[in-house]
Length: 390
Ligand code: GLA
Image 1 (cartoon, rainbow, N blue to C red):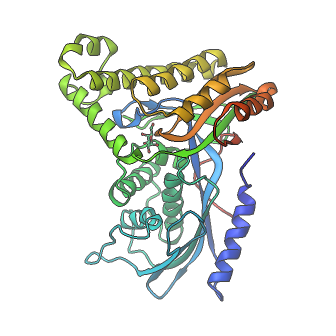
Image 2: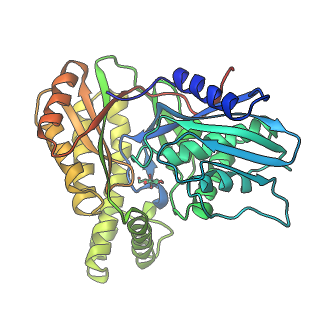
Image 3: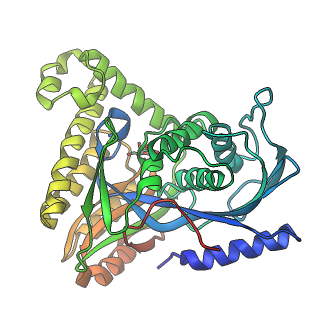
């Protein structure tokens, strides 16, 4: 079982700060969570619904303001490319930031560039995370949102949370070249303890769905594989969705019913048709699943999760053999309601809804049947980005 407590992470991060910036004391500490999506995959950029949960795993930023006009950043992530410490002058209108190397800093620089107040003062900050990097649990959104939350402490903006999530999404689009939807940044900002959030990605309205039943466990299984192509395949899927919506003369696939799609089948490229069928059916599954969870009908919820996985595998083609193996192993036993890949796909994690009494057997069965080495996290819905008491 993985997952160091956030308290330990904060203590370690403070120590790294003191060791690297002797004579300075950190005055600001913030944390922002990763996420797991229960259902509603590849629907956010089609203005559909998603149902994510904020994780107890977080990215932490600690630091202090400085008066020399220099921004100094240090990451403790072992996976980060070198240099892990870098310094640059505070940005000005005539001297904006631009993406470059090291890669890890692009998320941070993007947030600084798109921050909604200013001018920003110089600062020193150490960044640390226990969200597995590149594991499909939104380590990048948690980094962006943590950084934004840090900047709010040293140079307050107007506090608008939706604008905050949108600015972080923009940072990812422009500095990490990842044309993501809004789900990851939104849940990292808005996450609510003991709740999943049904997010309408068109209106950005949020409906919290309680998830407090002690007999129900959300089990995350990390395949520990990450296939390349993830970025390029993601933007291809986005383009195919747009192509389908354009062909049906609609703004987005949110406005298209399965009947509309079926009627137009002969005018659409076969692959584009399948992509659209996934999105349209997934949007419906997500609102149905939120209803099932609200009425504690876990078997119905689980059935929809498995349908979602199959649709992502067959119609959207973003799964991979490892994720399929993990889902099959999870489902092949007592007390498991449902299981599916979660996040963008091509590796990363699955999410499984399981009766508390069956968790140990389920984990053992997955270990016995998975051809790779999996890591497991039993997770509880946690709060969104917040300021830490140092
Ligand atoms: C990635 C993106 C999200 C979303 C998911 C798929 O995590 O960042 O915006 O599109 O993939 O549901």
